Figure 1: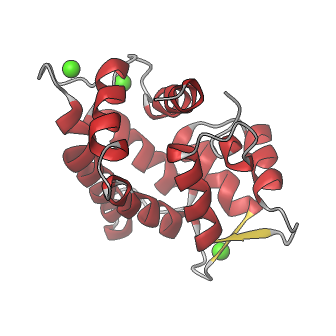
Figure 2 (figure 1 turned 180 degrees about the vertical axis):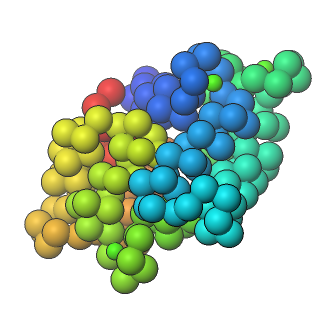
Figure 3 (figure 1 turned 90 degrees about the vertical axis):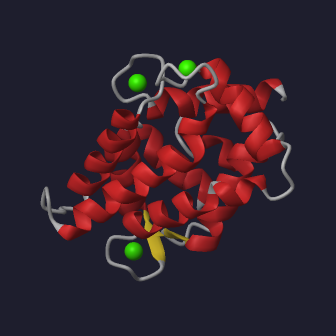
Length: 181
Ligand SMILES: [Ca+2]
Ligand SMILES: [Ca+2]
Ligand SMILES: [Ca+2]
């Protein structure tokens, strides 16, 4: 794994570690689900809120929990890097395992369902779901919205996240996707 990719993963790991334990647990993913849901105005306990929680829970079960090599119930950064290398980088279709969560996240971010993620929708998800500071969300959006059209398409966001998690270009705009690192 390149140093750049490891730095990007370290940053994303820190964002997902919502309780600051320096390890990932199911509760981190559920806290992120609750944050995103609240930012979209979903009532706690509503079917829509439960669906968001189910998506994050599934991602934990399918992708993150298997990385817990020593079985202590916590995924450390070392386990995360090993798991990511084996499960995503070294598998030809490894990234496909991450894509359903990204699709679901984009669905949630696109609050009005028009297929476009505006700067406001983008910032709301990043800030409330992942704790990215608002100014960094705005900065990321401006970099990603290269044509300054005021929104990102689903395809643009999918491409940006693939570049974030797989790419090795230090100058890629997508490196800013989750804020500064
Ligand atoms: Ca944690
Ligand atoms: Ca562990
Ligand atoms: Ca929208």
